[in-house]
Length: 369
Image (cartoon, rainbow, N blue to C red; front, side):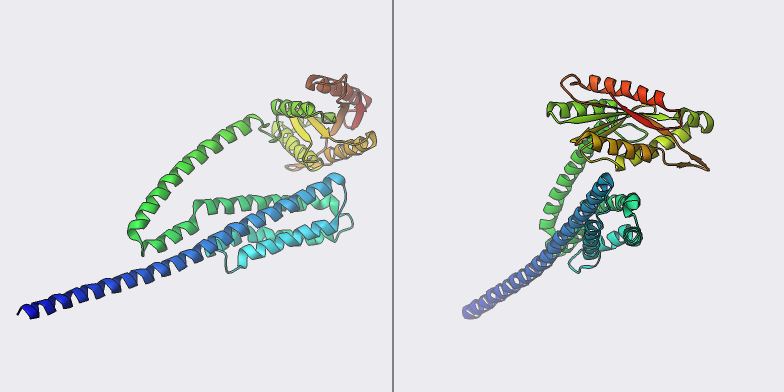
């Protein structure tokens, strides 16, 4: 009886050990499978983030190339085409590569595909034209739309759609551990969201205080701050004081809404005509300040001011009306005598009044101080 008991106990212990071994083997197998699936998900997330970043980089390169070509007034078709080809390739990778998250691919195609097709079609037509540089701003508008779409994709990634799918798959294998991880992740995410919202709100508030609400150009306060920084760095500066001719008549005849539309169009046109290092600001009413950095010689300044006057006086569609305005531009240079922002503004302002007096209100002219 005692021997039978020992045998029964021994068999029970063997059974328990075997069950434990089986459970350990099963758990180990499931754990390895979970790790493999997790590794595939991590690789997918990594590839998705890289593809999104690379697409954004190529967008930025094309944007920079177009702005440089517009500023220098050169077609530079080969370089524009090269940047465009790289952008299309980066989008194809983002939208079709098997390593990219299906969720991100679907969102990217939904957000970007129409404008990618539009960019391809518009760019092909413009680059084949006789003078494509005059139409680069059309391509630039499509690029800006794609950049806004890219921001939405980045935000989609930050919301963590792929991470949520990743955590759901882990949950079926590692419930207890997942609760801890997910709880910690949730707390950290909430803290990060709270910090991000606080930070972005403070940045937005600060940015709004530095921008003109209508044109979204730097306002007078921000303009003065930027110029002072450049003066401290002893950069060569050229100041354009720009006043619009015939603008009051538009306000009086068509209303202030029409005048606002004119100001926004002119702000956009001039912004496309200058370098990224230059400062263009609206300081009030129909008056603007443009600061050229590293402007070269007087002949180059003449070329720039004539291009800007031509941009300003191009016809503008306002509702069912077509209007045009001229400009009076006064120009002064930073020097030993003109060494402050106030002096730079006042001298350019004086030259602007000479330009305004030299032509009728429908024309454009410029004068040097």
